[in-house]
Image 1 (cartoon, rainbow, N blue to C red):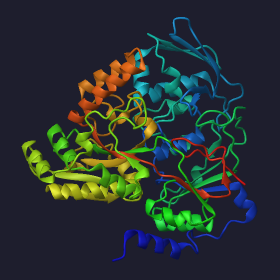
Image 2 (cartoon, one colour; image 1 turned 90 degrees about the vertical axis):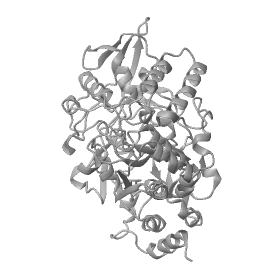
Image 3 (cartoon, rainbow, N blue to C red; image 1 turned 90 degrees about the horizontal axis):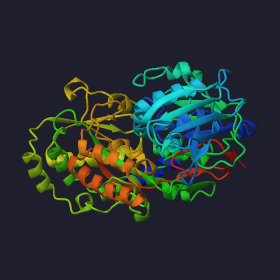
Image 4 (tube, helix red, strand yellow; image 1 turned 30 degrees about the vertical axis):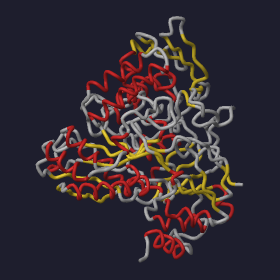
Length: 534
């Protein structure tokens, strides 16, 4: 019997002669163009409206941030020339670098920064916390503004500089005035970052294009994660949307593309045998897979139903579906990223112990499942979500759940998951995604662990858990890391009861890129500055 891996390998070989429907680039043009296969189709361009990583990654090319985290998670000045902090640690005075301009030629002003922070803080997890502590934003002049707090908040600069979705990107004031719950228009994708978005060449489902911003003035420090100098070495960056893994692999092998963000694990052996291709793991914290419930409507409005499904889910099945049988490429995971100070093993037997389908069936019935339709949104164009969705579909069928499996693309999932309607009116019950390990390292930016229901800035699925919210507040107020870790242990036990989502494990997927591509930075996402062709 032919295996899936054999089919993919054969497909890659057949496609290698010409993966993309265009001639090879001339040498001069090739040196100035970086061609990338991203992990998903870019359909939404507002990184405040959505947490989708594909939108966040695109955002980092266009917009800049006041501060940026380095590889030691320390906030460093980026658009900011620097800052001062009052003796009572309640007033941050931030000064912008001289000469910053947006892509439309207008100067970056303090008013733009304040408006951008306000919009971001409505949607972002740690931004919401910061907003509750802000007494006033005060514009002093075009280059200086103050964030005046009601009480000290040590994570203020971290919040402004973190790369986790949602990122505090600085937009023109008129754009930042857009309702945070409304998407900005494509013509408003105007930042001050190292690349300019070519909206006239944006063709969702096919490609997206950026060109180097000749007016960008990078910092003098070396690039380090999202801190330091963002030097654009390519005149043009093209994202080519290639959902078929064999075709993407062939495009990389033939040199038609330079970089494949999330290569399929089944094709790792093929790629490793190619002397012109490098496979390199760039994210030490890996990724965390999740299954997200819709808590507003039956059947997953009942915690018992959520727990019954989790009883039947085996993390090993999910991880092997994503990265294959290599045990070095995955780990069991709880609600905080393994290998970080807040991670705990307590209670994890509920997620990684033996699975008992019959017991899960009984628990499902006892919890009150009455045959309601379950709509699973499955993004089949992304191998990570496709693999997880297939495993969950099989589990649901074995449990006897009335399943509607909606095979679609990630762009449609991003749009549809925002609906709070019941399934009979276009809503949903479940979807899979994943988060960078950094995003689940602690409660500060851990959006999927929020229990704020349908409150401002709540994330899709809308779980309500007063206990999780109380513990989150206690974590912010904790005097030291040891107490924070104890609080996270309690949060994990509460999360196992209330179950806002189910972690499916931690996995590690390397970038695949041509050997002549250099300067790719380590971090939780692909970054397109500092990259060059040797």
